[in-house]
Amino acid sequence: MSPTTLSRDIATRTLDTGASDRVLIEAVRANSPVHLCADPDHSGEVVSGTVLADDGGVLTVDVARLDTLARSILSASLLYASLDVGNDRYLFETRRVSALTGSDKDELRLTRPSTVAVTERRRSRRRRFRKPTEVLLRATDPDTQWQCKADMLNVSLDGIACRIDSAEVDYLAVGRASCVVFQLGATAELFELSAQVVTRTEAGTPGHAVIGMEFIDDGNLQAARDRLRGVLDTPN
Image (tube, rainbow, N blue to C red; front, side):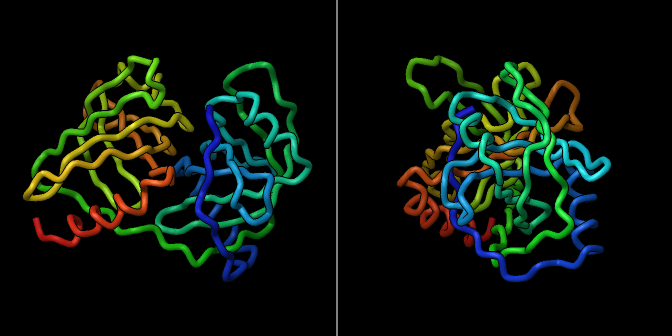
């Protein structure tokens, strides 16, 4: 996995223990995406994964790939986590309680926080489209020939959800970045963005999976968001 960066999040309110417990319960139920960073301001590179379990004061997180950079980040004595649950993002501090194995894929065990803080960030409203919209996903590495077609389920200024053939799901592990290409609007405006897989679930349609992807700020994102906002604000 290649760690990426997130926009800076600012905590505005710390939830009480009961409310924090409910957030964590929902995070496990939904296998919510979590991002781990060694920088307290959440502005550095992150390792992404999904929350699998909450057991006995320990959170289990599925980390898609433990490459050299990811291992360096996770070796910090204190980790700063951002957790996306529903339309909200929560922050908390944690520590690693399990050793990093030699496997490329691992289940990471982290100390469970007693409280979490909600941020001022609210994720954009996602829009669904009446007509099917095809999305092309392809590898960001020009030397890698992988690509596949997907059906757009919804899109927002923050990311996109697609339905893909299950045969492609192994490549699109959580944390994997790819190039996302699609056309929207009456003029079929072309968008080409970098995005990282943050969720992956089995689809209701047999033989398919649903992936949720968050757009990566690679220097082109803001301009694309300005164009995308215009399309999303235009009625179907």
